[in-house]
Length: 180
Image (tube, one colour):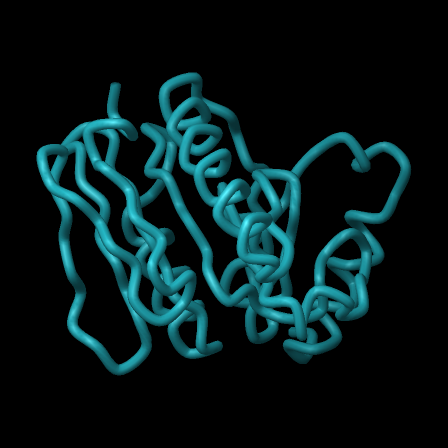
């Protein structure tokens, strides 16, 4: 078996092939490669929260926001969150095979019917180990769960107001606007 860093390097070369440039792939646990499918409801929620985050980040000149086509190196894996945020001091990080060579400060993951909860929670764990805050959105339960390193998870329902702490400090979201 290849060493983890060799596998990550092989993955970077593999996804850089011309026939894969229009596809989106993730390397999870340094061993499995997953093509990222799209789902209309999950994509719509991802686009909605991305638009709110983009406005906030630009107004406050905080950094850069990526959508479901922006990838990141998280530990030795490669992830493509539905929305990613890099603070200004990290936004000029090197890019390797279309993936930032750093973990995002914030990763927003919208649960899709095709997602494996085991894989998704593993990604959350790896994000946390890399220092990333994760907002996990469940379209079916209409909830947003915040995972932050060394803190208990916090759940916000459709009829609540979410006020971000730490990453994107002061960002406010009326949850009902997310699930219209």
